[in-house]
Image 1 (cartoon, rainbow, N blue to C red):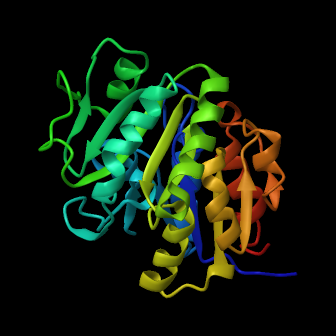
Image 2 (cartoon, rainbow, N blue to C red):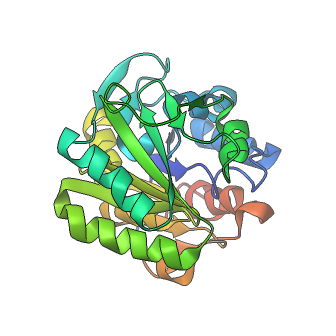
Image 3 (spheres, one colour):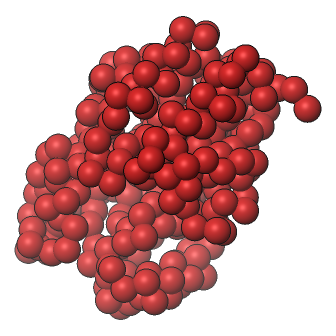
Length: 273
């Protein structure tokens, strides 16, 4: 089957950047080559939109940018909101309680703020370095804090707790939310319309590109929803086997230029796949 790729949609962490959050020269070159070939390039991430500037600016991205796994869709100016999906108010406190009951710390994101209850908790410093801004620390989440929440994240390095919390969230909230792991230690809970599959649909509509002409690339379970909606999908070499099994192809790891290699092999080599 021959299919001309017109848009590449990439996950960021674990895909486009290294484990140390470095955007390599090879990755930059691959995106520049896509642009020269007339192929559009877009990014989506569980990161807040503010945390995506360190990628979008050096790559000169001219397509809508999907933060919070699609919870907020911004114009390329990083200011204009195209779409936004808050968590239902009836879910917010219940989600925080559910995470706590399973031994996970909880972070709360609004469109503009990142709220934590303990700045010294695991992964807070690393996340601040990644998104390049600090969280606001609160003793407890107040009623005002829990207005217009876009994403709640549960954090734990205990994989058993993560799996149990994910199963509990899916059972508790069903189709009212999207619950998925964006990193092995992050469980993201967002609006049901905020998932990477919906990002594919939205970009298809805005850019007038058929889904079967869109190629997606990622590494985590929350990327599988966009794999399902796109014509071609690529799993990173650092993805687990369950993610790889849902992709059309597999490339090298993010530590070994897997993104750039995938663009060269599956997109730029004659621009035909």
